[in-house]
Image (cartoon, rainbow, N blue to C red; front, side, top):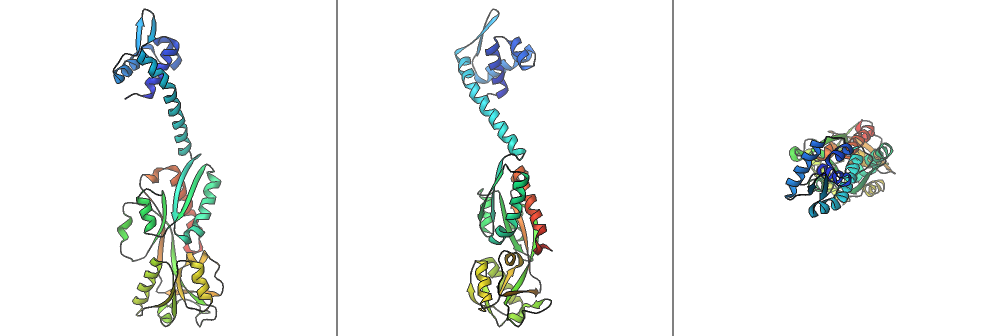
Length: 304
C-alpha cells in the first residue's frame, strides 16, 4: 500500500535531486529519507530511483508516481481540511426525521440555536411517525430520529441497540368543545366520564393508545372521525363533533380555537426522545444536534 508520507518524500527527492536536500526540505535526516524511499519501493515492487554517482534520477515508474503524487496529495490535503472542518463544526450535515408535532415545536427551536452556534452545519428535515422513523435510522436514511413511546407500553427493549437521548415527558390531555359540560372543570377528569361521547382519534399509534386507555377504564370509545392532522382534530372538536385525547405537545403545535383542554386521570404519558446510532453519536454535528434538541425539550411547557 502506498502511503501519503512516502509520496511526499518522493516528490521532495525528485525536486531537490538528493536524499540530503530532501531531508532538509522536509525537516528530517538523510537516513530517514533513504529508509522511507526503500519502504516505498518495496510497496510498489519496483525501483523508483537510479543512483548515478552523486546524482539521482527517476525511473519510468518513479516518473509516473511523481506525476500522480501531486493530485493524490492535493486530494488528501483537501480531505483532511474537510474532515477538520466537520470535526470543528465549521461544516457538516445532519439528516433529521421527526414526527409532526415534534417538527413544529422542538425542531424549530433546536435548529435555530444550532444555526446560530454553528452556521456551517446543515440540517435536513423529513417527517415520519415511529416506528417508521426508527426504521429509517437503522437503514441509514437519517442520522437522528425523533420518536416517542408510551409509559408502560410493551417493547421497551426495541431501542436497545440505539443511543437514546431523552427530551421530555409529554402528558395526554382531553380536548372538549368550549360549551362542553366538562370544559370548566378544575383539576383532572377521569377518562370514564367521557365514555358516552363521540370520539375523534389522531395518528394510528395515538389511536391505539386511546383505545387501550379507554378499555382499561371499562369502555370502548366510539370513534366517529379519525385523522392524522392535528389541526383537523382540533377543528372537529371545536365544531362540537366530539372529544379527543391528544399529547400536550400536539396541542401546543396548533392554535386550539373553540376547545378546552382537560387533564386526565389516570395520567397517560409518552416519552419523547432523540435516537441515533452509537457510531453517529460520536460525530460532532450529530452530537450538537442532540444537545440542542435536549435544550429545546427542557424549555417546552409539556415537560414541566
